[in-house]
Length: 158
Image 1 (tube, rainbow, N blue to C red):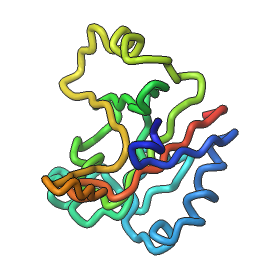
Image 2: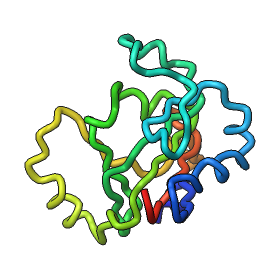
Image 3: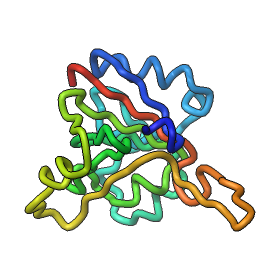
């Protein structure tokens, strides 16, 4: 389902298998500003610790985020805001990669909502595919208002 909405899915065995796949993507090869919230998969090139103004992230090439779980029926991935030093990281980077543990895939949104019932953080979000927009002529554009492409890594051993 994730591929249907414009994302790409990669099934990998270990966290160390993520970077070699990204290294094959030309826009990753050319990236100079990578915010990685999963350094065991991809080393960051941007230190997020001293950044207090999210506007300073406007030139990010990639954000590598950690998904708490994924929904099989629609490809949505739940990201807990506690893992994000800045909410904007998911939306401001040109490209987004999300790493999800394979054992954390649920079948449907009913199970997903059960998982987040009582969620006590100020921010959490389901992400599915790159940003999209369409006009009245039914011309679909991917990456118009957010990430241009979404790469998802389903990892057996994270």
